[in-house]
Length: 442
Image 1 (cartoon, rainbow, N blue to C red):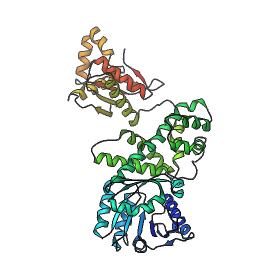
Image 2: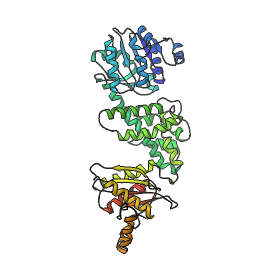
Image 3: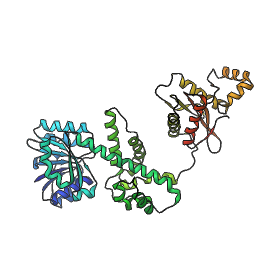
């Protein structure tokens, strides 16, 4: 059969070689033309444009990095949609949002052709041996037409439903593995101080119920990366993980919900990708957190990240205790609001109270609990303080100073919403989670 292959990254090239070995006549195109050379040496014909690939082929497969690249291949100059698509079948194997596949399928149909999506699970090894997992979406007749090709690329092909269904399932199956590498990195960070051999640790983790197939298959590469290696030749790189996680988050938000675990993994990976590690294999990803653990020192600065950690932990502690809706205000040492979180249902004055507790603690240099004793011992003092502060000081527990290990004041947290003692307990939980010391004024 005459097959076209557009997009010759690692996966696209591996699938193209598989199709050549299966006896097909292959026409290929890639934005970076030099990537066609290795396939041309194996008998493929390099085309000058996506439209030329379609013209030479009965079935055209596209495998692009993201929706932007896919759009350029279809809608760009001499793109797929500029060709005569009458009677042609297009199979897109990219990992993109369902709405992207639906729009492209409709555009192809308008030109007289048919399109299905079949994103795949697996990396370059399974791609070369025809052992991928195919997740097809599209009309039943079109999927049936594609099956002779798909079954040569995949050990299993599932028809998920209409156009977009395959794309949705691909995002779903990629999510657990993507977040696993972050979880595994954090797990290693917890035992880094034990000084055990990375290969031994990976083997032990692989023997537990929490280990996915990916860890067992990549164990040696993961161990080598944890020992200081670069993860080896990438089969699924960090840049791809970041892109997939971003796509998952966009899809979930479009449907009205959040993916907090995926969002946390994306927030952990994205800075490493931007720092020049996007091309590293997933086997290197766990070293991100392991490296942080090795270099960890007690925090000495109240950053935005740690201020938000204080607030998030404090709110969760309140939920665990069954408290009323809370408001958390975290101030820096200069009294500036650094982070603020408010639970649904909290009263509209709760922010002013929480801010006043923290601001008063900073203003006087001790936690707001101490105001209770001073009120009883010297009510005139507290009255004068209220006047001097313009009524901003709230003289009850729930305003706690945040201190560095050397005792210097980094800021304060104030919480309001429940009984003052309970508010203070949530302050302490948040400050402890962020790695700082607390002073309640007790």
